[in-house]
Image (tube, rainbow, N blue to C red):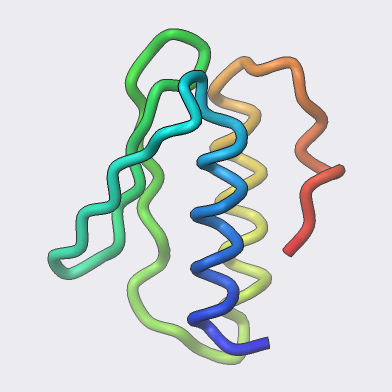
Length: 80
């Protein structure tokens, strides 16, 4: 799985989990995905450089982000 498809799946997942099913994607040096999660605006920043461990790093960061939003979902159910 290449980095583009991983990024696309992360965006789809965060869109699905957001309150109003909308996210904003901003790309300067990093890709930043922001939206409303649990009534408050939160942002997730993808790791900067793709490497052989890109998928593992993104999964770990995504699980941590989902836990911090206090949503009633199990982050281990969402895999890339």
